[in-house]
Amino acid sequence: MTGNPRVSGLKHEEIARILTDEVRSGQVAYGVRLPGETTLAERFSVSRNTVRAALTELGRAGLISTRSGKGSFVTYDGRPLNVRLGWARALQEQGLDTIVRVERAEEVEDAALAADLGEPSERFIAIDRLRSIVDGPVISYEQSRVRATPRVADAVSAGKAAGSLTRMLLETDLIASGGEQWVEVRMLDEAEAALLGRATGAAFLWSRCVTRNAVGELVEQVESLLDPAYFSLHFQFSSQD
Image (cartoon, rainbow, N blue to C red):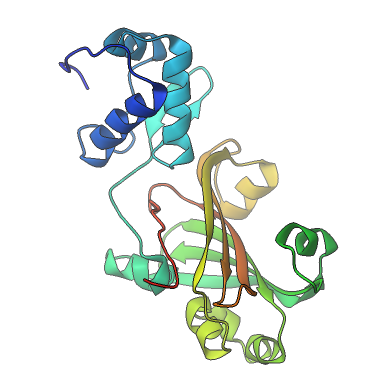
């Protein structure tokens, strides 16, 4: 980012767009530390608070992670993934083969989740999975909560939770037509770090995705911890896509 002309009077959203373009275009590569808040404030002729707000936007988009006392580092590596393919196929298209280990697959009752999602039933199928690169590290931990139906329960009993959940949901007539997605950078706590084989405090992307069918019924809620070295997320989906 050195050598850029100074601009002034920008709002934090405009600064975020400029920095986003520079990250996504590869001007600042994966793992590189961004200039400090003071340097960026001087570049854009704004306050450090404005810069901080812009960096927060980049963090929410999964482009950077900010480490206390160390600065902000680029976590975007240019690999866009298509959620409609499912993780395995999307990663495979990037030349990465993965394997899945099912940590949990059972019916549960979760009144808090039902209330949060506005669901009439407290029954869900819980599917928790660890995804690894073949002969490599664990790159994600995925906690799915699927609408409990007899066909889903039968599919899980048949061991299909170890395969493509995208395919399993389609085969059980749980077809998503739209949804919502949240993504932010989180630091792994001790338990998460042990599960993923990483250091406590390592920066991972946290994602929550809620999908529904054409009549608004829940298909799936999935919360994921994603290694930013392998995932960059851009989701846009609707019943008209």
